[in-house]
Length: 550
View 1 (cartoon, rainbow, N blue to C red):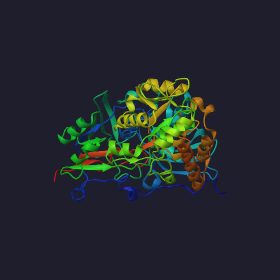
View 2: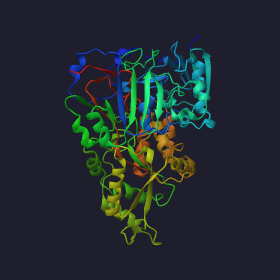
View 3: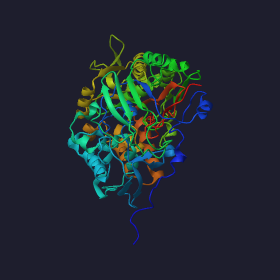
View 4: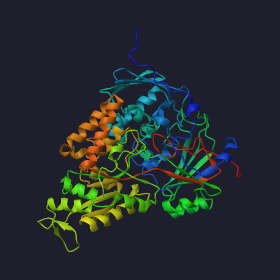
């Protein structure tokens, strides 16, 4: 009897993926690195920009939290260079011909940090827990097509889908669906606070956390199930990693220069010269394809943004290219879509599709009835109402001079077209309330790394930020996105994703600003640093080791 499943999508040969998980630009220490073999022992300190709001991957929506979470959380499947999926906790998997059944066979002998076996029952518990809306896990959106999770044996689990989902393997590879001990999940809502209670299966164990100061992770001596792209199997080389929260650029750079930390992320453009091509240091740049570009996401169901002419004037009334170059000094690329430019699904045809044109923007606003001016020079309509739109920026997500870029946009829009773009810093709680009610106006964001169609869904689809008011949303855009999620033919999916991007920028539902990527600076003795393809963010420290100084 023939199997109802297609050929197993086995991903073997980890040695083929020992290259860095991203395109790296580093200083001239490669020759010295070859002269020494990796060795175990030692500890490092890592200086990061932001203190995570939540350490629970199922709940966190903060990109900068994942660079820490990945040290103690593994996934069923890994994503390697070139977009290929590789074994991790699952040694192999298969997909039915109709795309509605996925089977995963687990590696044997895996245990969580608390000693609980990581078997098929634990996988089912995790996926069912995430899917249960009572647990308020944001990552549940990644499993909308999953109808049932079945345990077939202690090492085999099966997912039954209500419809084909072209994004499922990408979602399974995401840290947002990383596995947590069922014992931890049953313990309650304290997991956002991190610490030993948050038991994953990763190469490091979460030892402790002090808000605003530091988090520490110690080596998991039992670790023997690294992802297929890892440079080695077995436990991590380092004994300990201490993460220090250093929000000020100058403080982070100074801490690395003085030896207080060994690695930093979020390098200020003016500080790159301190480390790039400098003796004793290295500078590394990750790709810009997994997470979305930094974008103004406009709630077009609330006036005055209900008028496409106002949105287009906002898009065209400032010189975005000049602003990005001024703030980031050539270290970031100007964006033309919310999909990252290194992503296979990026629509390159959008480049140059619109441009800075103050005359056209002013003419458009005149046509829209915003012909008056108030005492401060801002446009008004016939009722005397000022042309104003608020940008609500959650304070915990502010990093990389993004607020400086928006302030430059403010100034240009005021001068060029008389539009009052009001930047207001809000709390994470206020943002959550706005999201729930659909009352947000402009949300400046990069979206979590995911399948491109899933990213569009989360950003601008009917299940995304606008979901509370989706009945007033753009049905054409929703159609492109939902069809792309269901498409099983790669060429058809690419066409639909391209159309969704084009429609979103043509209608000025989004205003892309710059393509974000991670930048690391480190001592030259820190070896094995890389970037995780699925996240575009720094990989965990499993392959990192300390060389002796040359």
